[in-house]
Length: 207
Image (cartoon, rainbow, N blue to C red; front, side):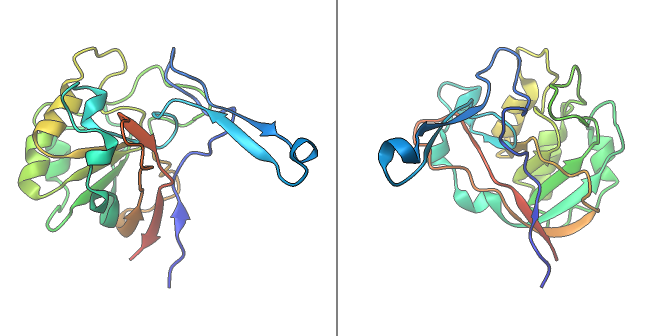
């Protein structure tokens, strides 16, 4: 049986975060010397650090929170495809891919190479992609990028359009060494009841 491959960003003090957001930090807040038996760590971070999912509440105050999301979206068969440094992710790009039976689509763009530095630009998801994905039966879109929208966008059109078409968002994947093909995916969000997103430990296994 094929082994699981970790495709999530390591959470350490070098991980890039959105400019102005809470940086990641970890420290031992209660040492073995102090407790007499164990080391206990403390983390501070944004829920959108590294590899993470967006809940609709992230961009819609009336949207679903992490507790409301179906965990089955984040476990199961997936398809990895490569778009080589596209200027955007378009319907035309996706029409070249056989999406028959695909529920979870993971796209490698190669546009974010140094994940210790937040990128200055990324290829956004174009208008119409969400509708096309819904028509094809895709319910989860995963990218090797920190967002589905341009980094300077305030309207977050792709976020809203994907949500309107019941396509959920997985961002910040590490697909550098992952070949195109069919995989099993596990990328469960934490059970953060009131949160607008959650970090995930995303793993793939070749089918």
